[in-house]
Image (cartoon, rainbow, N blue to C red; front, side, top):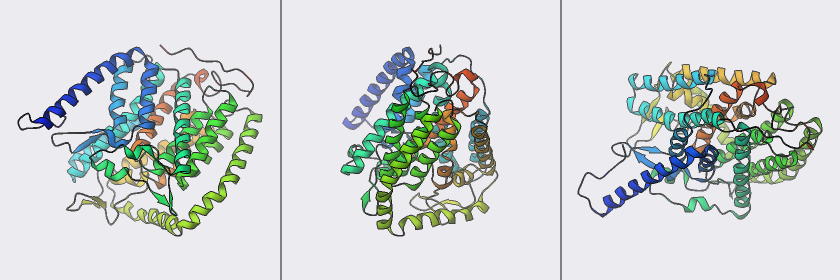
Length: 443
């Protein structure tokens, strides 16, 4: 329930009521338009991920204690507009998502109910919202068109990040909001005295990891090879300006896995060209990266050591629900033992959802690795596998969290599609000089 004033209709409450009425009217109009144009619906949601800061949502609940991110609100609208979908088939990833939700609900009855409720709401507003969009969208819109939309939007994100890195100006932080999320994410980080590019993602790691995840999808998009390479190289360069080690590592890993296992999407000659370009670009940018990390001194090392210390929390995890080490101080800040920040999504999953969910997630990632090694993976699956180092060393935050689960839903749907819908068979040329053939839109 949206927060409304309980008192008389003073000016602030009237303004808020009017704002809500306008928002509802816009949502209804948006639903009508997006239902008529599925591609516009999907594109609008991707834009909300890339260019709308996380702090521009609104509070929900009787006291506004919980927050609905813009991308989540857009996800609910887009999914409603895309329904019904044809030829829906269950995936093993649907089982994983169901397990996550069931365990989140069960955790409400296992102790630490307040903390468990916050974790359950996060599962719905970040994980489930993104996953359902990813599951539904390819059943109404050509998956290759979705790849292309992601490629275009994240190329723009990358260009803005490069400009931000060169000019040290981020226009998104100028869009202020009077809430705790702006306080948490509305400032610019620095490393070695150099501001780190964040774009609209609120954090340099979230931006770097999201760009890295977009690279394999971009390399499988239905553009000519040189365009795909140019887009991917732009994203790779942009990760450097985040000065996030995990962003750069996952970006390079995404390129390597794409070269090795997306052979139908990238010809042998094209792979050689891509490797050469990446090596040259990496060599050119290496001095900048080394210089910044040298100026940072022990900052990066201390950060890595902190992540290593988190392993001592494994013993506090429960089979289902919040770990016994979880507690909130008088200010309402959540701690796990002596740790406030859990810089590992895998560990955080075990601490908030339980060991059963953690094991299920690890098994799913192993299965994804096997699909990649066997050459059976779609671009979305390759993108997720390339993110495994990030899952082990950073938490899912801001839009990065929603985007990860969107790609998981995209992987679940595309893996179930006929072989003719997989990478390189239809829609992507096998040679760099071949024209691109497009798939007919799915009806």
